[in-house]
Image (cartoon, rainbow, N blue to C red; front, side, top):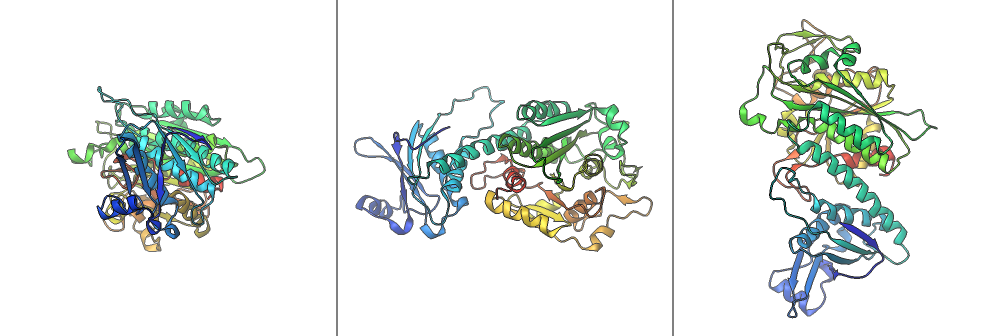
Length: 476
């Protein structure tokens, strides 16, 4: 999809407000229940001269927001693709209280979402129509609109990178290839990427990470990404992503049907890589480090077992209650490394961590726990800008006690109750200093969805790449 600013030509789309339906033809369409101008309503037809017409409903003018624009123009672009329209003209007036920059960004983002396809492994792939969008904003606001569209294009490139990583199966994306792609994609944008192999991980004494990895024939990789673009600031924010490229459950083996999509268990790492791509590509003024401890959780004669007591990089010992609660073990060492070795002053970890989160919040809302209200408020603001949903869960002291072990410092499962919170608090207990502002985000439901939701098609979503960009770049 290509965007031009302040250019005419192509199918001229008609934008229609539900409360300003004018003209006999539009009223005729409403009477026939074909089109009424409601938000997200799109109608494509041919007139008596076989000339194409496209009507885009915006709903009631006072209710328009960025998310309505994303959803509406996703549907408009989907209709254009279906009908193989190659060029469209959009004449966008000033909408409600939205600035031209954010309006253009949301419209472009929605349209770009419609272009995403995951058909890499199909032998009969069909070429998709390349649409040229001639975008005409309010007069005098061309520069603002162009900035918004350019930002949307780069953000969506990062989101699509995340979606591609999460969608690909474990025989294609495993620790070595994940590290290779991260290095190729991010170094091209100015991010320093260092990949540590097994010997270096052993030298770091990342025992928790290594225990999860040891049953696999695929060598674990510690992927460290560094982006420094604010030399005047002492703040260094860390992003830590769960990097399980396949999770069989280990000796606490999953049922066969539950293993089918476990190649998506590296969703946190995909999100982190995508966020770093966006931050660097858009030259955000921020210092960010990212850490991914990537491995597979498999079964072999050397695999770790329920009942084992293992160490960790922090020195804390862990009783293994369940080998399928492995993600928090890899995160434990990654979080400690980010805050101790890299000196992160704040940290956000993202992980497809618990089924408990999916049970509570479904596939539409990510769950979060945090130790800092102010830091979390920055995420909330970014979520609102991005149209992404995160719900904060409670962190009462009792949940922390549920992670205590009788024979070790901690156990890797707090039991059946409060599973999302106990898992998150387990991860947080490996901060090098407990007062480091920290947010844990469980994306078990949202990173990979089974039914389409708004402009998100089923499978990988790229969730939270946008929010992380807006939050860390202070663009929210």
